[in-house]
Image 1 (cartoon, rainbow, N blue to C red):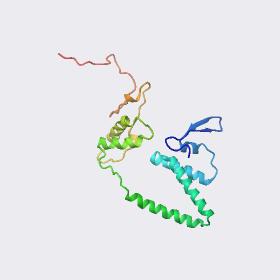
Image 2: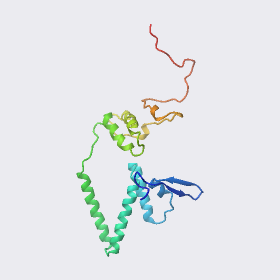
Image 3: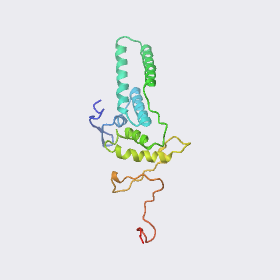
Image 4: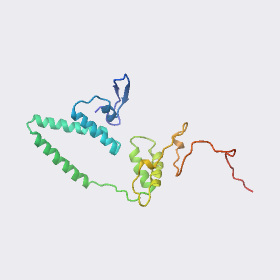
Length: 197
């Protein structure tokens, strides 16, 4: 729990090969531990699934599941049967899903509205790239809307290519619709200036 949140501390993990990793990412920490117990392997699976599906909140999943297990252990010590605890968790899960359905949600209906797409993208990338979301979100939103059509409403990362050019900075990022060829032009003419007569 000390690596969780914006003030989470880094952990130094010594690996078998003599290498070491410094990270405060909960999933990275769990992946590099030798897990033997099936429950710890399940927690790793839940955390990895969260990372794949949502890209974030792996630390929350680990803390939440750990707290549920701690509460279940306390109930066992008080004399509750395992089936009673499972029934209680199942009922709590149903109540939680019912509560989630009542919450206000935003449904994206206009996939081609750059302003809405940009604001959603800034929420998504703001946690991982703090400070650059206002610059990168419009670029990403533009790239996403260019891959969509009236019949295709799903954005695929396979439709967007990221080309890295050495020596550039984030202010030089450009989103273009087309193909990039990383080589010089053929022939002697490199530029053409506009001529006024």
